[in-house]
Image (cartoon, rainbow, N blue to C red; front, top):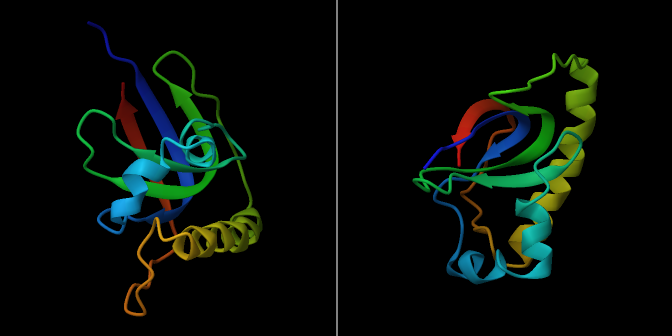
Length: 119
């Protein structure tokens, strides 16, 4: 069995541990799949490692590729600032739907997250 490595750079949040009980059922809905199956540049997506499930990232995809092709990407810091509002609005929507924790003490930090995911 072979595995493929995928690489991502996203501007968003580490939501590991902040998914609610509703998340597991929601992710298999049409809307949930839109947030999990379009992991390409320009999309706002969830990333949860299907192998280990050790993380849950959510953000705007700045760059993506795999072990065979990973194009050089350049973006201005102002581009990241612009997408932060879009990602925050989507996070609030998901909190209102109760798939992500809506706790007044939960204050996620917007970050650049670069990682590898193996499938």
